[in-house]
Length: 335
Ligand code: ATP
Ligand code: MG
Ligand code: FE
Image (cartoon, rainbow, N blue to C red; front, side, top):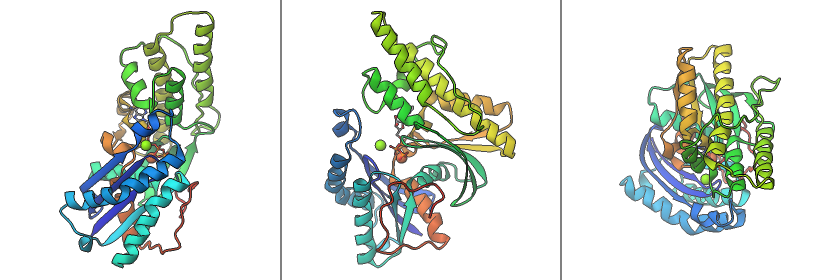
């Protein structure tokens, strides 16, 4: 089965070709980061326009790289939510037009389920059930993957997503956008024990909260500025990151132990974080739990992960028609 996948939920226009769901023949990603940088975050209207400008070219490049023609495609997989409405509509309309013209099935894909599926591409032997820790720009979820496309949410963030916290802290320190990779890099040069930031463990055992930590960092920065004291950016980055990583790691491992799982798969952009990868792997080892994560390029937004999730939906019989609409607030597990 050959899948053509399209992703445009945020600020990456991407198209990919996959064979039998897990073999990536091409994965073209056109990122708009440079455009949005000057605004310090993604500007939705600008994102939509940029998607329109590049989608045709990105799809063609995906075909060319895979050495394929439209006639070789068996079905289309496309992100229909969650994400920015205008951005989603560009990829979705393009996918619908292609499916209609080529007269092949259209399969709508949940972007977050795509992030989880990135693990299937990298780990060819990975099969459900397992626990997944989804840590992306807009979501933070602890989920049981019971089967392909079958998810049970154990916990979620009550406020900010983990990636959002990285981006906001970086912004407050004037470090640029997106904040995650910058904080990751600076943290390596800092002391993670320098500042004791709060860890929200909460009573709801699998839920997360990052707004208290965010406020604590902002208060720390403001107090330093008021007193005209030097801010050691590397130490703030390292101490903040440690607080995030510690809570994410311990809760994910607790869930695996409680529910008797031997595998935790990390998903989403924050799964790029070097400290998270290291710390959770180290903590999990003591309990005989294995940590899996995709390579960097499959952690952040890309169409290959959408194609993988779409392939499993396709073989499980999902078919969408021209009435498929963008669902900006689509939840994981929601059809
Ligand atoms: P969502 O998938 O929830 O709709 P999104 O698509 O915008 O949101 P992703 O593509 O999953 O988010 O990831 C982007 C996020 O990942 C950003 O918040 C970015 O700061 C963060 N990120 C990327 N690399 C790292 C890193 N090395 N450390 C921490 N965070 C990172
Ligand atoms: Mg992005
Ligand atoms: Fe994403």
